[in-house]
Length: 372
Image 1 (cartoon, rainbow, N blue to C red):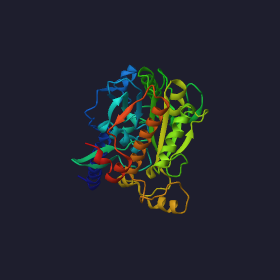
Image 2 (spheres, rainbow, N blue to C red; image 1 turned 90 degrees about the vertical axis):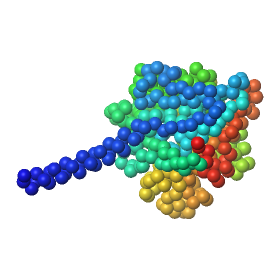
Image 3 (cartoon, rainbow, N blue to C red; image 1 turned 30 degrees about the vertical axis):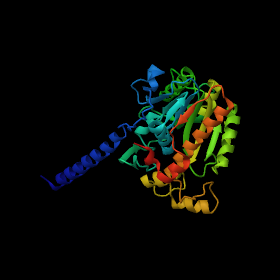
């Protein structure tokens, strides 16, 4: 056999090895993250229970129900609308594994954009997973993409036209769940998923709903509560109460001419009071350096630290970063305070959520202490 044949075979061998490694990593993104619901779970279903057309697709996702058995308000909480915003998903997971209702109901969807958990954003160099230590061992979770997996909805149009407003956005936003509402029964993959969420809100007569997010530190809406105008008083009372706890949240009103977002379309299309919360996550920013699992967990980046010292971003880095524990703690505390503010305004239709960790406890002991 000639020498170049051996060279070709060697190249082929290494190509197969690298392909096998890449295939293993690719397939691991399709392995679902396992949650261990609290004993108070009364039912577990799927989003497709509200719109059968998404059954069996990569958009279908688990729904967890906690029913006190006592009449009251119904709360809906979504995490993972953007799967690269890990604090939203992890805060929802903490609720699933700890919450107990004594009045009303709580419905939690930890991975709202299930499709986005099967891929990472191209050209970003992001890790596919991150690991959290718990009292009984390590648990690994997926780090996904901002939008749905392009394999599930392809190709992106040059321009995305929101239904029904006709608002025009970049084509890649067609895979963004938080630009898809109120959805469309015969629309694209993501529009059908948005439609399913609206059917859930209507069928379950949800009273108050949450959509948990994160944003780059240089974005103005970090550490904000964004609300539809009908929830302005509830949000204002919550922000004031959080100030008393030395927690600063800004209040933002949903723009009436920016369509497709949960806080706008849920409020316009249903009776629900919708709230979206944002924390600060350096892994999403343009100033970041090394992009790895440590950045997800510790939220510590030297470039952002310098920017904070120069006063160029709104974060303070008082904890030497924006760790996952801080971001989850803010989401959980914001959720608790907004529910209390809603209850004060609607004494005839309240909900009581118990056994969710306090802000300082999550900060001091870490997220893993509240996972099974």
